Image 1: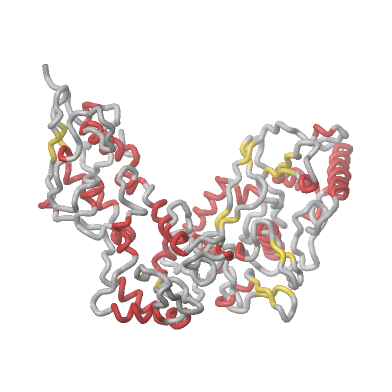
Image 2: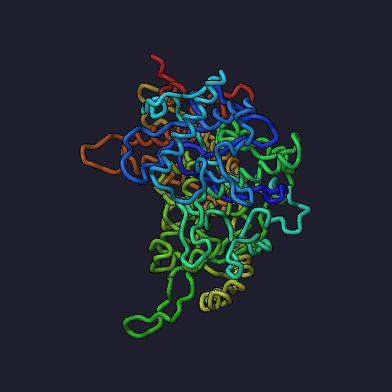
Length: 588
């Protein structure tokens, strides 16, 4: 062990690990792992298929239930004297290798096959000879190589969010170098990794160095950097075990079983524990010298750009984006939510205006505006628009993410004498611009709306009677004011909604989607014809427009058939099939 001291992992990243489950083991000093029983959905399923790297498999992969084995072996002291060492070797520092009975160095196909066959079958035979129920002991391949297993995986990636990071950091609160307990950097002079000497020296999330498949850095010693899977399991499990071993059976430590980290119910328990253990007023911000405010602009060109006429050309035609970095940090679980490859500026090296190899030739414009990319600004906003309280409008309306009329919501046009300051900022080199950015961004954002508001209640019609098509049914009386005010109330805590609903009429356009922004929008029948025509038209007829708009909103928000009004005796929102819920049948 590494001096058997308390060490805890701070992986600010979703650990999406290879295989159906993570190779995790028993918690030292705390008894056997909890067996999952006969559940058909498990988080501990490992697929032993290492030989596929050498060519097509001649047998189905072995489905191995890791927690089931550790639970069974934990009851057999005679066969389990080495704990995890029964199956796993460790390096000189006590960090465990994940490969079965060998280190993580490459091995030949014959060596891998013999290691499994000789040791697994022998263990089964030894336990059977002792009268203990065990796995297959014959040499029939199908005993282990079962092509139709009767279990399925419910494994989930583990996200070490800000609360879990806070809990880990709290265990190192008295340490002189608490970040260095887990985070390390490569020391070129020493030729090895060392503890990060200070918070500002932490290179960022583990995934920045430990990629999914690992990487090789020529000239570095060692040249190969472990994959995220190997690094996370090797360091975190070793740490959890060493903490338990050094503190006795009652010491609080992290899980060391597959289900303990990756089981849905266990993850729910971890989240609930975090809510209980982390004070409500705790500062969860991970401080690394980052600014509260920033400005998003293209990186400065190495040399001035000139057009065909020889005159200087601006590298980017849009105004820069003032960005409330602190606010966005509070809304994200990890730094990797946005900074997916490095903590440096997106535009600095990866996402340049024309695109670069380092960023997969994704341009700065694409990185910021790609609506289906979770790390982009537009992509994140698009995902939020799918929340029930937003989806009612944004599911059907054409405006939203990608609407060019909304460019000014982010690309703020400077006012009140800030034009000169913004022009100066754009002309500075990256280092000088970074120094100017926080104060300039704060000033540009000072006048932005932070809450969604609309017209005064007295200016909003209390009801709207929809009766132009009344034939089989009575006119429908829409509780117009109540709907509008409830929508506004649902967005009151969203600064994002406030920024994009920048006018009092913005909320109105959720229904009056193609009308001019106005306190008195035109009637729906002004655009939608009362009778469906024979010619193809992008506009639905009036009846279809009403039904699509009203019922589509109820469905998207998940409120059809539910009572959402808090008033006594309130009725449920009509279901799509409940015609008389909106308009009563006419009396004969």
